[in-house]
Length: 336
Image (cartoon, rainbow, N blue to C red; front, side, top):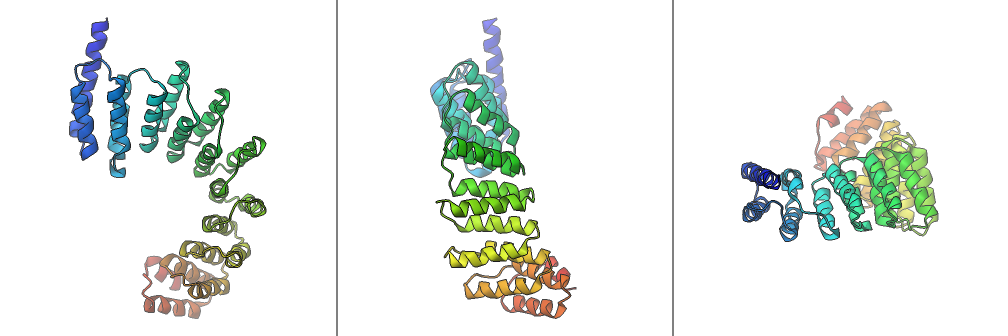
């Protein structure tokens, strides 16, 4: 029976090799192929070989992540028993390849084998879930950390909040913030950005606004991304005045005003047909040396159209042409 199992594993490795040879890749795939060839006669991969495989996948360029994911899935049955080091490398490889299910499976396997998992390993698994919008599994991992008495830190919570945010699950994101407060885990700018983003995606502008107010009252330093995310949330809720107010507050607080933030504010005005405010923001941008782009100009043109200000729209279009701002089909649709 052991001979049969050995033969099965060798055949499985052979199939992996055949698949590798069919992949189009550079250094990483070639390195993995070489490692496997050296181990072809073994029934399992040893720890050193396995670590080399994982490290090779981790160093692969982004364009080869899908290839590395194929290798990772095919290699799983050939892996040796997991220890803490192998688990950390395996979950890291899963995170890079967005293989959240495999990361969760590895953690479940070592839990059954009573291999100790640490906060870094869990956070990397959470990262894999966040990249794949698997927010329910991210929450399950947070619960598993509690059951395993693994202490959760700021980075762990931020990753879990980000996973909920990508799924538009603002209520769960805010619940995690509540857990942080109860556990006296420090919240940073990334925490608030992830939570506000979750509210923005779900069009829960009032919740996003509340978070912004809480953050402003805290010791966390405000930055451009926080303002931008909050402005986008206000825009989705039709709260153009609050969006404009945040732009004014940025200037007063000496927070850098960039093109993306201005675009979000102009878009908020545009959705409500507030053409005068949209144009005023464009003028203010030029005084702050912020370069106009197609997106923000289109939003202002849309605002002019909704307000019936066709003359203003044509003047803005002419300014775009003179200023060499790229125009597109949305630009011309807004003035027709």
